[in-house]
Length: 130
Image 1 (cartoon, rainbow, N blue to C red):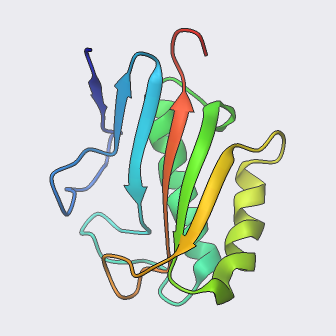
Image 2: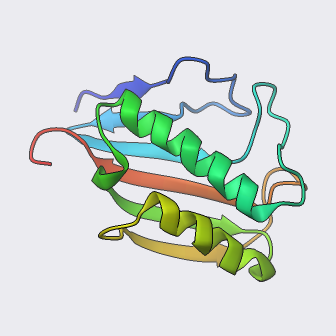
């Protein structure tokens, strides 16, 4: 099946061999996204709400670059470093998904950089049959 790499303008170099998103048969898979600047430094250190906003804004850019909107997101995989931040993550999450919510799960785990507090990966249906 043909697939297309989705790399929004201004995207920094990834830490590992991946692209921000891959579009295949109308389904967009957005890679795990952290609150990184262009040089892969964590931004908003210590602020889970601001990191979540940065992550979801980045995901929104990938979805829009693929021709979709956040309403097209059908699944989110959420990883938090500390359950104490769960409420802060949810408050910002609700701003990005005010209507019908996508399916999701959330787990607590260690993340790739010690100062990262949240990571989100998404699936969106932006093409045919969406």
